[in-house]
Image (cartoon, rainbow, N blue to C red; front, top):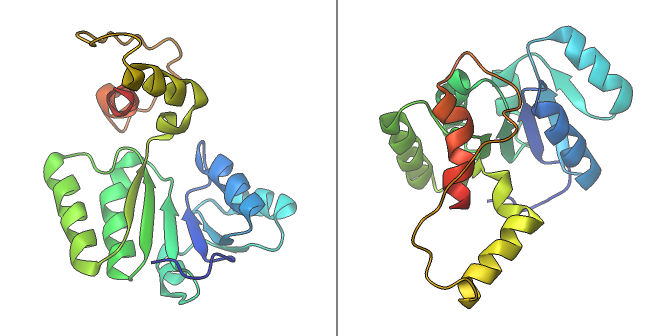
Length: 178
């Protein structure tokens, strides 16, 4: 479990969503290292966050004992492998959704985290959106009565990804909110 909050987190993946996580972890003062295979991307981020350690080697980052937790913001197809290696290295893990691409892999990761006594979290950011929090309060108060039906409509599809099924990209948001 994370004991010292100062610069103890490593981030792997600085692309579409990773760049936002990089900024937030940096602003919180907890970012130790950032990892990506794209050297140009590392150089670009180094201009803005020069006191962060940058590497192209995920395994090198995992060997660093000062890194207590890893944030994984890589393509979904790599999540299972990256989470497995992170847990094996004794790190707590926050992984962007989806946790894995199969139920079996997801269950294995949860079991690995339990056996290693590590924290394993999946990024369901909409649960923390003020509108969702308020809606939950209204529903919990009974103001809306008994909820019998929920309809979800995706209005902004964001970035289209080819490495995963559309359900893996968007359905987790709706399901986690519901």
